[in-house]
Length: 363
Image (cartoon, rainbow, N blue to C red; front, side):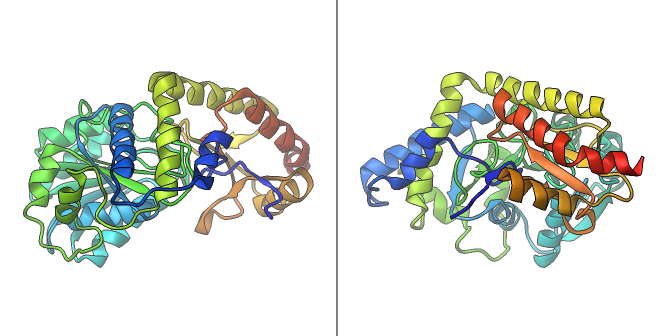
């Protein structure tokens, strides 16, 4: 049995009533009662994204949805611009290169957000680029991109805007249609507060038209196949039925409360956390942070790895480490699922107790 609570930026702690859906008797995936669950979930997701786009659900992690977006919109040799601010921008590049796309890679330092003017300049100089593959909230660094301004620029160049909104969805303000986002990607285990197991791709009309001409190989992720089932309220393959039921309940709670209020909760408690921790002397990596998580940057001489292990073993709470070359340098606290006063204050308390003394030793 797990003996710690998740204070990580995904998977997250799930409310008991949402988790309880996973213990229910589930319907046959071709029964009309399940189609009603899918249709209800789709409606809630469209409301949260502020979109009329088609919603496709896949039994995969968010990376599967990223791959689904690439293989359904593009063809071998197509050129894409990837403005990267961290590990998930780099993942865009890995996926695109796997499918033999020509990648224009525009990296920014870890902790920075994309400079939209550089995107504009690159598209002016490279009119053959077909799509921009970008990240909304970067889970590895905690940085947030200005998707609204990026959308305006990308649309002005008549390119497709594909946004990995996995971490920011439900935590940061996002209006898919009015912000000119052609494809938005999500996953259940982040701020939409459900168990892991499902991802989603919202596909706007411009992207759907492009999908009709894609020649990249695909089968499981083929949206042309999925569309025939979507029109009847189903998914093409046997999905994670229980996770879909849990997601439906979680999204219902978000829409009942109001997505703007949910965004405000994430902003309120993320801001409180950073203010309190900053006053103690902690520093953060992200210059323009998402409300989904905070990334504490450890000073030289202090490793985050033993601190995280100590908090897990002594407090029963697990924070996330940095990824790859950032491992040992960061403590990442996910506000997703913890957008409340009690968990925010608890995180502050245990970090003050276990991390602050080590930081003071090197100052």
